[in-house]
Length: 290
Image (cartoon, rainbow, N blue to C red):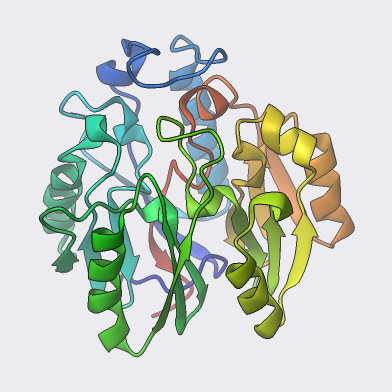
């Protein structure tokens, strides 16, 4: 049983990928990795992260270890998307991740998950630019990693499922080389509670959240900048039960004050260093019950 139409329903099954030689031996300048990148620490960080998932009761599916030379393949969220009807293959906008969706395609076929669509041609899309606001509302961020063609292709595939699709333009912020996804600006931490980077949030998205009755927790902006946008990358294990990076006390306290249960892991050398947080390290395959 597989299917996802929520960011916060209990995480039942998830695909992860062990760090391979490509990330351990990566040229940080080429891959746009930051000063905290430390490949020596990455295997243990990933191991401890997976232990957190297992402790929550989530069933782990390991993707094949061969990363085909794509260092960012450890961030299994981006190259595909799970829907209630099956998997959708993306087409990463970061040039060095070109073809990463083939790794996901092979994985899905090996475990019997149907592939219902593919971003094709000049379309570019990364799943980090997508978000299930609720079971019938799907958001897409249009920016440097997901272009207009890719966003429209996603809309064409998902809308016939009876799902409302909204597309928002993302800010330039640090430019085309940096990773700024829609999910860099917002993480759902409970069914109707979201942690947001208010200064960079698209106005039309703010209005939609208000219409939908969301309570907003503002992420402290100094920690957002300090963490290279990773303070807002929160993985919901269940409604109101979340996992985040350690070392962000103001953000963590804001979540706790809002009644959110928060667990942390030490992962700066991987997550901040490589521009991918706890959500990015997972490809949810089943949330809740389908």
